[in-house]
Length: 267
Image (tube, rainbow, N blue to C red; front, side, top):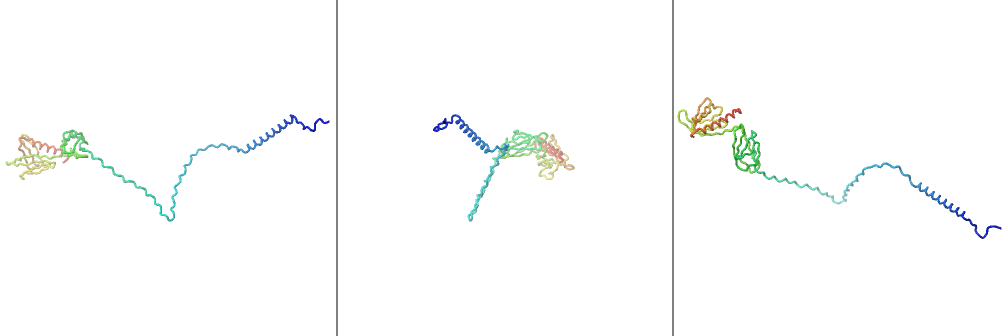
């Protein structure tokens, strides 16, 4: 007698269930391993790191504008002409400056006075003047003073040059010539750097004499007499109508001083 019932299915029990679960787990693990291996093969290996190079970016190229090609049969394209610069206008002339006096001298350091007002020493430029006629006085040690009339312009510089070393002589005195044989004649005795000149209506006693020909030239204040003697020639004795010999004395002084300066200059 069989212990199994043919009508009932065989019973596997707990051991069969465990076997089925184990087989399913193994199949799942194998599937996971296959997928992992495929993923590993598909990923490329990382390339070795290279040192980064720092390069300046190249400037962008500036495209040249394309010139339009003229159409066949069309008039040539006229390009606009460059504009010319506007003419530069000259600046207006400066306004005229006020009057100014410039004083120069052959001896520096000369004191300058205009209308008795001290202005400074040479070389000098001053605007402390007004346009018109003025009197200028100048003096320097060792030389004769200078006096002259000057005309200041309305604007700009008026230049005056003082020549202290230049010999100046322009002396004139009214005289009476006493003749040796008696009688007299009147006239003017003048002196310049060229010499002496006696101008009279009596032409027999008139003369023109360079200083080199003058042998005697002296004044006697008490006698009120001025003597002029030509070298190897005649003698003239002059007096005047004044009560004293002041005019003759001043004339003699000015002529003597000029003669000394001329002699110092070899003239």
